[in-house]
Image (cartoon, rainbow, N blue to C red; front, side, top):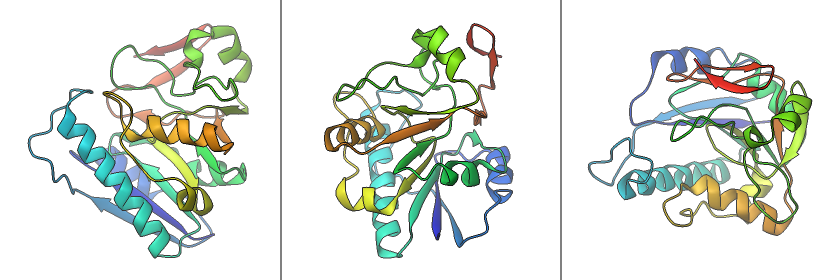
Length: 212
């Protein structure tokens, strides 16, 4: 399987570069770091419209490059992620259309990026259901998204779904998850490991996730 590893950046962390270059993969793998933010003056605020527009631009670009380049899948690693060396391999082994690595969202209350699967509805983070989160730890589970911080998306999904702006003040990963649910495209999360963020290392500790 030929994979495009795409890392969109506003500010690239050295730990992320090291983790990306350490990814274990036996197939074809091209790595692209890109700082292409055409909308001026974005901030770190989660609802900054220019920030959201730049994110949408980046993922639309990744989609086009994956399709035009004949890749079998797009592997997104955002610029503050520290995926373990076998992250790509373990996500690919799931054999599902969309596979997410697990991490805590950076903005707002630190909740895990695994949204509970509820059929056609988007659901909410498993952090709100600590018993279910604890039971899921170490497994791969079906989910309703969400988050492109560490995600493997198969080519056939990219051919069906545009990377479009999220509803309201949300990023395109939100609308992507909703579109997958609408079309019956399965999304899974691998809870066997954690893709830590540079700013927030996350551990599983009995009752729930916590930030250190």
